[in-house]
Figure (cartoon, rainbow, N blue to C red):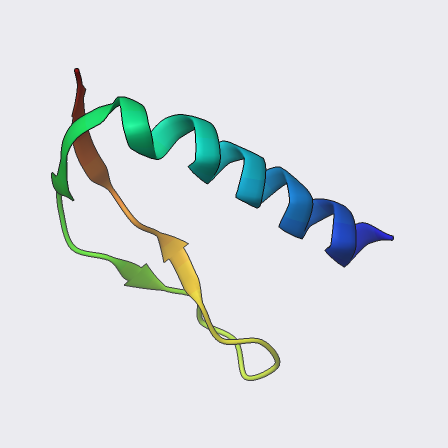
Length: 51
């Protein structure tokens, strides 16, 4: 249930958010998670403006 719910929430977020964005860009250096178990981002700073 957890992964399925997370996918539904992210899908809803993008469906509602993307049309409202005018621009989106990196606001700093992405930081990777320091783990050997699951790779991914720890921080992804962004800057955005709405329409």
